[in-house]
Image (cartoon, rainbow, N blue to C red):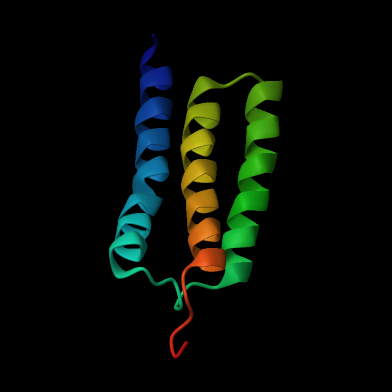
Length: 88
Protein backbone atom coordinates (compact mmCIF):
# COMPACT_ATOMS: atom_id res chain seq x y z
CA UNK A 1 0.00 0.00 0.00
CA UNK A 2 1.38 3.39 -0.96
CA UNK A 3 1.58 6.32 1.41
CA UNK A 4 -1.17 8.13 -0.51
CA UNK A 5 -3.49 5.14 -0.11
CA UNK A 6 -2.74 5.22 3.61
CA UNK A 7 -3.60 8.93 3.74
CA UNK A 8 -6.84 8.14 1.90
CA UNK A 9 -7.79 5.41 4.35
CA UNK A 10 -6.97 7.58 7.37
CA UNK A 11 -9.10 10.39 5.91
CA UNK A 12 -11.94 8.02 5.11
CA UNK A 13 -11.81 6.55 8.63
CA UNK A 14 -12.05 10.02 10.17
CA UNK A 15 -14.91 10.97 7.85
CA UNK A 16 -16.72 7.73 8.55
CA UNK A 17 -16.64 8.07 12.34
CA UNK A 18 -18.20 11.54 12.35
CA UNK A 19 -21.69 10.04 12.66
CA UNK A 20 -20.90 7.55 15.45
CA UNK A 21 -21.35 10.05 18.33
CA UNK A 22 -24.69 11.25 16.93
CA UNK A 23 -26.02 7.73 16.37
CA UNK A 24 -24.97 6.69 19.88
CA UNK A 25 -26.46 9.81 21.51
CA UNK A 26 -29.71 9.41 19.56
CA UNK A 27 -29.96 5.73 20.44
CA UNK A 28 -29.34 6.34 24.16
CA UNK A 29 -31.78 9.27 24.33
CA UNK A 30 -34.32 7.60 21.99
CA UNK A 31 -34.67 11.02 20.41
CA UNK A 32 -33.65 12.65 17.16
CA UNK A 33 -35.97 15.62 17.43
CA UNK A 34 -33.16 18.12 16.89
CA UNK A 35 -32.00 16.46 13.66
CA UNK A 36 -33.35 17.74 10.38
CA UNK A 37 -34.89 15.07 8.17
CA UNK A 38 -33.61 17.10 5.20
CA UNK A 39 -30.04 16.95 6.48
CA UNK A 40 -30.29 13.18 6.83
CA UNK A 41 -31.76 12.80 3.32
CA UNK A 42 -29.06 15.02 1.82
CA UNK A 43 -26.34 12.97 3.53
CA UNK A 44 -27.90 9.73 2.24
CA UNK A 45 -28.17 11.14 -1.31
CA UNK A 46 -24.65 12.54 -1.40
CA UNK A 47 -23.21 9.35 0.04
CA UNK A 48 -24.89 7.24 -2.65
CA UNK A 49 -23.39 9.55 -5.30
CA UNK A 50 -19.95 9.23 -3.67
CA UNK A 51 -20.33 5.45 -3.68
CA UNK A 52 -21.13 5.43 -7.40
CA UNK A 53 -18.03 7.58 -7.95
CA UNK A 54 -15.88 5.39 -5.70
CA UNK A 55 -16.85 2.24 -7.57
CA UNK A 56 -16.39 3.96 -10.95
CA UNK A 57 -12.81 5.11 -10.40
CA UNK A 58 -12.29 2.54 -8.28
CA UNK A 59 -11.17 3.92 -4.93
CA UNK A 60 -11.10 1.81 -1.78
CA UNK A 61 -10.91 4.77 0.63
CA UNK A 62 -13.90 6.52 -1.00
CA UNK A 63 -15.93 3.30 -0.98
CA UNK A 64 -15.00 2.39 2.60
CA UNK A 65 -15.84 5.79 4.07
CA UNK A 66 -19.12 6.10 2.25
CA UNK A 67 -20.34 2.60 3.10
CA UNK A 68 -19.92 3.46 6.78
CA UNK A 69 -21.44 6.94 6.46
CA UNK A 70 -24.40 5.58 4.48
CA UNK A 71 -25.01 2.87 7.08
CA UNK A 72 -24.97 5.36 9.94
CA UNK A 73 -27.13 7.88 8.07
CA UNK A 74 -29.67 5.13 7.38
CA UNK A 75 -29.71 4.30 11.10
CA UNK A 76 -30.41 7.97 11.91
CA UNK A 77 -33.14 8.01 9.26
CA UNK A 78 -34.70 4.91 10.85
CA UNK A 79 -34.50 6.57 14.28
CA UNK A 80 -36.11 9.71 12.85
CA UNK A 81 -39.04 7.66 11.55
CA UNK A 82 -39.51 5.43 14.59
CA UNK A 83 -38.60 7.34 17.74
CA UNK A 84 -41.55 9.20 19.26
CA UNK A 85 -41.62 12.94 18.83
CA UNK A 86 -41.41 15.08 21.96
CA UNK A 87 -44.80 15.70 23.45
CA UNK A 88 -46.33 12.45 22.20
